[in-house]
Every structure is written in C-alpha cells, then in structure tokens.
Length: 140
Image (cartoon, rainbow, N blue to C red; front, side):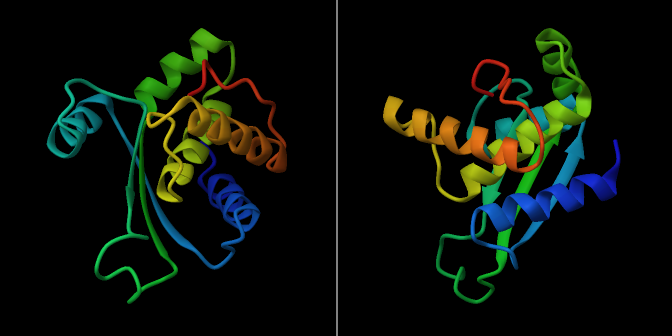
C-alpha cells in the first residue's frame, strides 16, 4: 500500500466533508489487534474490518477542534473482503477509510435504515471524489 497516496486521498475525503484542516490518525493493524480493540471498546467478539474513535464529541472536543479521531483498519480483513468482492487491497482499504471517517463525522448505519442509506450515499460520493467506483462490498 502506498502510504502517501492514502494520506493524499484522506485529505481529499476531509475536504469533501468540508473539513480540509482536520487531523486524523489511521492505524493499520492485523486481525488479532482489531479483535482486541473490538472486544475492549465495542464489547464485540472477533475481528472486524474498521473501528472509528471520534474525538469530535465529548467534554474536551472544543480544545482541539481540528483533531477528528482515529480510524483503525484490519489489513487482513480488508484483503479477505477485497478478494471476495474482486477488488484490490488499496480500493478496499479506501472504502474502509471512508466508512471509518463517516463514523467519526456521526454517520451510523446501525441506527436506522434511513441513516444507513445516507451513509452509503455519502460513501459513494466520496469514493467518486477520490476516483474509485461504488462497489461497496455489501455496504462495507
């Protein structure tokens, strides 16, 4: 994976969300590490593809308004999902990055069908913005 390309596309995504000065950490981990985070913070067992930790909410969010949060992506899960969908790792990684960033911005596909549709619509818009297709691997 080209880390500079990920950084550049991340900046395009943030600009597309009207937050060009936002700061974001992207952590690339394996299935074991994301399973630990999933268990510790979300109380869910097993690995997942992406977890987002927002710093935009809470009592101290106004101290560092440009600090958005962390997106953690399991590269092992991304590879498996990309293979199943017939897309490469970099494309699947960018889909997951967008998904995580949207969670940081308050989108939540698990709350309602309407929110899931809004999140998918925004995902497609951002994918196009960075030059990717809208093959979302079953809604991410």
